[in-house]
Amino acid sequence: MNGQPCSTIILTMASTEDYNGKWALVTGASAGIGAALARELARNGAKLILTARRKERLEALAAELAARGTDVRIVLADLTESTAPQAIYDAIAIEGLNVEILINNAGLGQYAEFANCDLGQELAQIRVNCEAMVHLTRLFVPAMIERRRGWVLVLASTASFQPVPFLSTYAATKGFDRFFALGLAEEVAPFGVKVTALCPGPTESEFFDVAGAAQFKARGVQSAEAVARIGLEALAKGKRTIIPYFSGQLTAFLVRFLPVGLITHFVAKAARPGQS
Image (cartoon, rainbow, N blue to C red):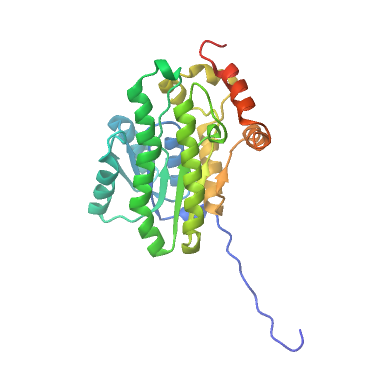
């Protein structure tokens, strides 16, 4: 046009194909969403470092993925211990591996009246859901910034959008996780690093049984595989928050317009222990 040669601009769309050949660290990988995230990453060509407390389950998952051609390492660690994040980092560094995808999936919960709860479990939630997540992120993000490429997924929850009586500590830690992810995402975006807060609702996993909240499974659950797929697609595209199911999206939208006291009152009525 106007005697000028035409040029063609090719735009490359971000997708989960970008994970191909990258090392991904998945915490809490022995079951539930963590195992599903590991399988989905492997399906997209990522190489995996799996960490959790349960050796037999990690080894079984590693063997399953290796049989499909995935390069897999395992690191046993208990993130309730304050030294675990550094130990994980050191074990990976010794192998000379560069983690480009960090999946902060490990998490704990406890469903109980706070005045009668197990204090150790309450404090463990803070250590795993908040402290360990921040510690691991701080260890691995600087190299991502230096490479000007990286992905960080933080497992939050739909519980992060409002207080949840009888899951008070859990919901508070997930609120922390979500806001941490949002703040970090803005900080590291200029360096090509993507951060996403994945906010699932009730999901097929052992969480309800471990947290003592099995009654919530009767209200309907989403498959861990669906949560993992949607979460990793959102991370690849650079979405900063993703709620992987419609009713959760609707609830998160509506609570923005309702008084928090009213929300908390009705959540308490629905969640009170002993309710069917």
